[in-house]
Image (cartoon, rainbow, N blue to C red; front, side, top):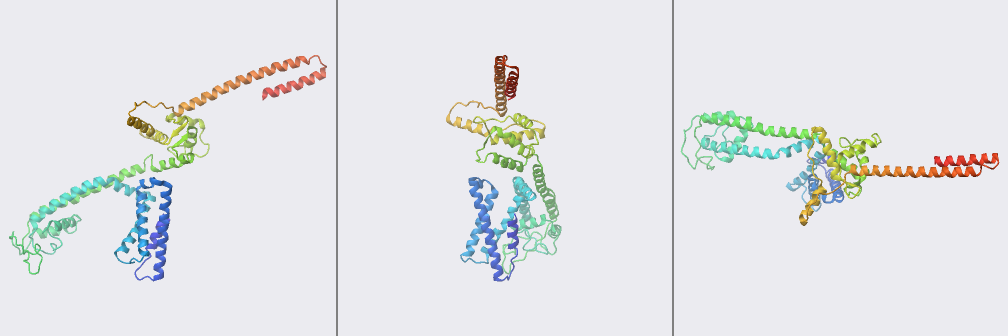
Length: 445
């Protein structure tokens, strides 16, 4: 963003009559920024591959970069530095400012509002055009022969549909429409409904044409008042209302529970655990993922602030499917987390979407003509329960083996102590003490 603003600032330093050295410095700066943006586009294409072209903003950046490079080459091979071509090249460079929309949430919200309301605006705009055309056609029938005056001029009249449309557009803005109405309704020194003459000025624009001298009509009051009421106070307000409604909807989405930045945080956190971008991670990494995810999808803690037991219970509640024995799928995890958040916000269960893996497998089976079966997959909670059961069985077996070894060693110790019982007392006591201590150490071990 800083490079874009600095480049725009440098382009604004040009002025008429600047020195050659000053002009070359600014041109070299523009070349530097063009190469910088081209390098950025190249790095993105190399890193993202074909996914680069799935983002409309990336396509816009690429078009601006290509246009700037073309202008740089055109100037370098001896193209004119002035004229329409140079102006167009400078215009392409200025389009870089549009990239600021990506980094400014308020500007992005306005653009999203325009895109969201565009279909409705097209419908209302088409209806407005139809109304303008109807009133222009009626105006040509009523006021085509009215003599020219202060407001009825060669550029504002009803002698043709095209000029009448432009005149009505001016009236829709409120520019002296009432004065034009009075001039078309009350005309002095005129002829009431003159016969059509092809040599009349306005119909035949040549020197010595017959001046228009037709009178207006009081129906102009009804004509302009109805037009102003319908266009200015109704249809234009509907046009504005659609934009305001779209802005309110976009604002509600921006203040919603699940935002694009939450998904971006999920992708960034997932990529740490899945550096190869396989879309799969082992199920035992889920607690780490949930702990590091920002709220509301996760706990938003990078330390051990939340117990493993709590995180494990939350993961079991999500009912995430397990694939290939011990791996979970990217889409399954993010969908289940999003559904959990929406269920809480809506205070009612939200319909769940099917896993993309399951859908693709069913589609392949349909294409092959095979019989579809319901995929039998375990969930993370089942796998976790099996691990707990396995650990419990191993612990039980270990305790039984340890108890048997201790009992066997105790019996062996008693036999050894009994065989040395008939020896001298001090030696017996020493040996007994040593064996007993050794036995205690083994049991403790």
